[in-house]
Image 1 (cartoon, helix red, strand yellow):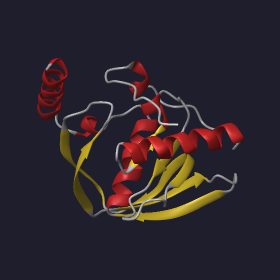
Image 2: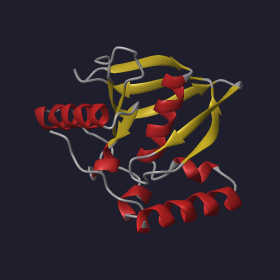
Image 3: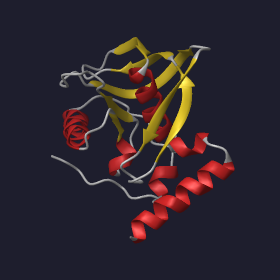
Image 4: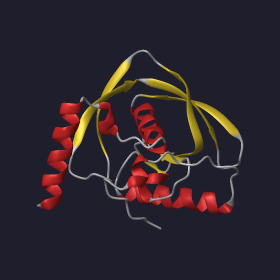
Length: 165
């Protein structure tokens, strides 16, 4: 099921999500909805708070052919490269605007997988950017929080102008 996005500035987008205690059929169903919602955007990832589910759940799929979504519960970055990579980031929660954000080019992330086991996986380039972007959502942060105050204010003003038409 494709779920609606929580519109900025809804407080849930600023609230850290709760840890997932165990993987259940309900959690797997949320992941399924998240993948379907992400693919409908189209986008490279989705954090559960973006659709109003306040749990530390994320999905990422940066594959060319799609259908390769990585489903993560309680993801955390264990290691981040010193080398940075810039990518134009956006969010369906604040449509119509984007900004170039610099993040580590590679990250190692530990997470609980759909079987309830713990995985550690390396992500590089766009995959790394998307995973970090989703973890920000789980921590109550938006991509534009990484901008200077001036650039952030301009972006939010432009988004508001677009919203009003």
